Image (tube, rainbow, N blue to C red; front, side, top):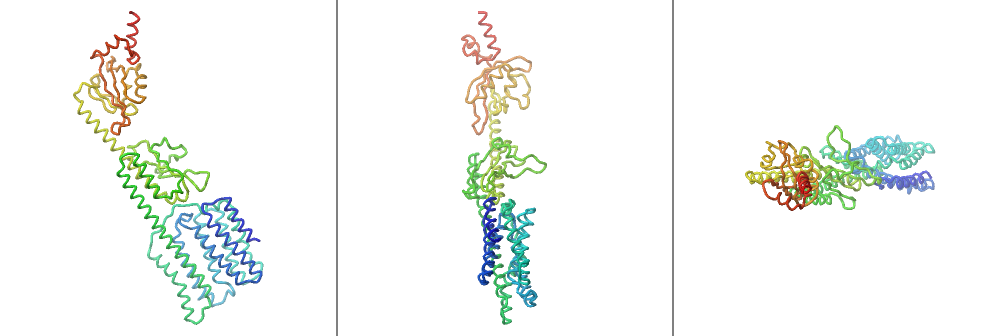
Length: 537
């Protein structure tokens, strides 16, 4: 009853708390069910079948713990753990066969069960150390201690007292699945693979070779009395070795995939001539790095104004974040924000921007480093494009300056915010000033009565003509006709090109005053004079 109740509790906990991966907990539930079946078969006098159930329990527990410690789980580097477990299994086998077994000090204690319980305890203790303060991990440790104690005590002192450890196992593991902290044990984490070293490879090789050597020694002596123990230890070391090799192959395949995707993205970003090409290259790289069903949305924002305020972490004293998370109601999914800002080149694109991906948390976690690198490459490409455009605009301004230096026409180039980027020398002569104020705007030079008209004209879209008065350095006013072209969409200009004509030098003003047409387009001073002239007439 306790075994069935514990397995049911694990299934209920999985359904209620919805961990990132359910396979480890389902395997643990199957192990509890196999143990309960072994207890029933032992009670009805079927010890042989009961032993098979107990061995099945060991296999299911081993598979479940391997799932809990797999790459991308809370234990970010399990290579050393697997190597140490394989070595510990071989050492325990040697100690049992040549020391404990020959001395017959433990009577009917099964060496295979003790070795399996010790390895189980080692894994859950390592998991508890990796996850920190976690009640579910602590309860798993308590259950493993109960199994180890009962495997030793029950054969020596059969009875209810010897079965207490199994009762503790059922209660502790069932409670571990019911506590909300069980979901943390399968939360994804960025793997940190350890470098391959020769001594660890030698230890793994010795661990794999130990069970056959022990079997050979017993066969030479003439009697193989620990065949079951040797078989179980050999199976465990073989399983650990296969897992270790599988992890290595998986990491190598993932590294090759990331390298190929980033190399292709780098080539595409180097060849990108505009932001649309950068966007296309980034999305193609994301499709290579992540499976399509793992991504729910991708946003390549080129301006910080498109990023929600809650998506930007608070400014701290440390270095800027390479990426950060936005939590969602569904714990299986999350949003990763990778800023498109690199210092000190961020001055080329003060708007910033970010690469925002919404998808499965485990997949985003596994590819977080690659996505940060991709965002950095995209930022470099955008900075390069911005700098090339800035150099192009500078060369265009220098060309314009060289062409019209001695021209009577007054040419002015305005940025999108109407700041004067370039003005021909004739404008300074017209204003009677040696130089223009730094960061001056065109409406700063216009009479206050005409500023609203000028801002309204340049605030729209398209080309046009506006009449206004410029204020000279001595306080007098100069009537001008400003013909502007809207070239904000032009890659080399990205602003307004204004041609200014001095109206007092021609007959256009007299003609307009004589006919009285389009007076609203004329400067305010001219409209006032015209109105007084009509009234007198």
